[in-house]
Length: 371
Image 1 (spheres, one colour):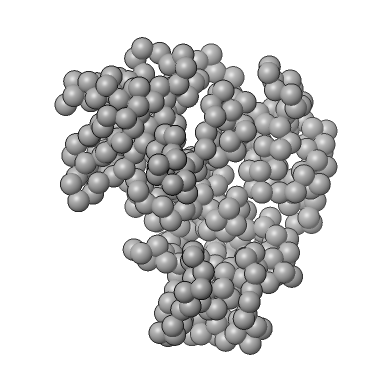
Image 2 (cartoon, one colour):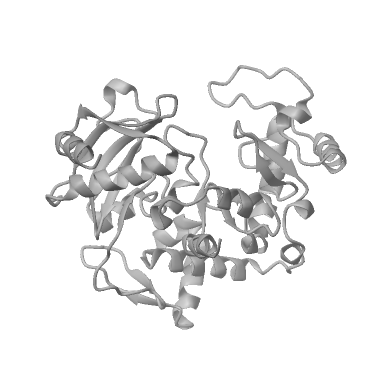
């Protein structure tokens, strides 16, 4: 748990996403950094006392350390003023008051349980949220309810913040908007190491108007240092405590929602790696695949690999594998070893590499050699 907590502090946020073709998004960045860890650590940290992290709209929907809650109160107030993030058709003060009272009485509950069997409309292609779900989302955005846990179907259980957050966190005074912005930029800079203003703003989805003054103040305090990065057009800022390793012994597959690559322009500036997720692209128009993960080896992203956990067959499927330009000769062997570790972590007995992609033949041979 100490390793988990250090990793969470360094990463800052773990994006939550419902796609489960391989593994839920929030589990993957920890695997990429820690290796095969016990996923019960994440559940303990987010669902049991002492809670170490909580969901909020920190990047997008994401886990964040619980001590960031006070810094998010201005964001909560902004969402409260606009009745949530996604609009609030049909959401009334009376409904929200009723839901708060019911949650207070019955404890952590899903929207479906609070709907009490009311029918849901099917007039939207996506989520088809009930008015109860819209109200709860608005209340969540405003900090009136918090996420206590999720069901096995990934449904949120909402509860009162005082039953989710540690008392010492709720008792913290609300910082000024400038202080909150400075703290978020401070953490974004620490997580990035080196970043532009745009990078820093994106990490916690802040407005640049709030970020620029915070950057200036952190520079004056010596916490971040203005630097020039070769090939970058924009000025950059280096965290004063950033490591300067002589070599980077990294080997990791990265979720599409990993902080290393979620800001696609930064990934391109750092690695020369053009990356777009193709989940919503029709199958016949996809260039690389449905759920493609970059493969980081040392200081380079050397490959990208389409992955699917076939849990019924107990197989990690690799529908496609592609090498990046200048990928080293041993990239396939290193990727095979990483996929073996991933398969073991997911409880999958075998790896099946299919035909698509220029790296597929070498990867198939490396997987076979490692059996």
